[in-house]
Length: 469
Image (cartoon, rainbow, N blue to C red):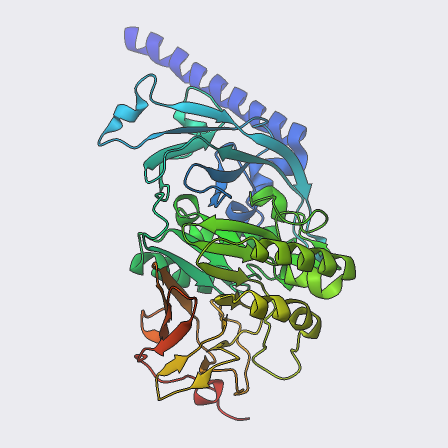
């Protein structure tokens, strides 16, 4: 009888508990309508599209003063109306968690909604959090995490490691340059960004030359881009310049500024967080909003005037510009005349060293003012221009006088290492094969010479892989 007496109430309690659980589920469904999880699961890419209480799309961006600060952004659902960054000096064990070792910075939070009707995506309600972590020591490794400030770990991210650059301007540093990712980002770009990180795990930052995705407001495509980079986005600072696919009908993607946290030192007006300048050790790095410049006269005048001032006051030995549209395109019919007429005089006047571009979905590298002297050496080298593509969308190109090396039907990433007197440029395929490489050497007078290095594979062209119909 004792067994029966205990068992029957237990069954009754379990049944009641089940009823109450079902009742709560039904109530939740009624209260939240199309926002509860069963509706999410009807969307194939729901894990890429919808936020939750746990931070996602975490990304670190370079600041104007990267030796002493970093910028971080992330996303949650709208229930998390506040956000915080916790940061501490990295330690050999968990002792950075001890009292007094961590400090907390409150983020700026933007409640945000977007619905990509073009691709029939569902309404996405999110909270985007942005924070600037200042007061850091140069050349120091930190750990940080982002979350809602609760005492429980469940709604915080993991701890990420991040190292600030040192103060020795002549110490070498490296960055990875990507042309357009744009299409099939989760499927086909992921291996490129991950291979680049595997080959250069101590890289200082990454540079994206526009067209990160294909449709500016597509939440699933932005989700794929963040998914493809994964934790790399949260541990290696990035900078990005917008491409034409980050624009729709002349308007920058509504997700650009909420998702990124880029410098605000560009010209006032519509190019906020798209046109800006960064000093990184002995390099001046400038992002030009080529789409806005090409299409809008006021923006063109503002960016040209601003760039002239930036370059006139530049004290760094090396100068790199990044923009989406190429100064010199790789194919006929893709001419960016207004861009070239606006910027080429300044590029030549101030002796810009590198211009890193995208858009043409092919590869080309050269220097328009080169005079060939021997097989592999160019004396009195002018500006070196590169056009590259990291995603799978491919176009054809035509050989032109400014090109020293070109290619088609090839996904690439470029590892660029900057020393006191030399820039070493290496373009790699996803297999890790060296496709193009050179050293750009600058003496104390500013005179440059370019030394080509031997690639590991021959030039690749679409005709070699695609049969004529």
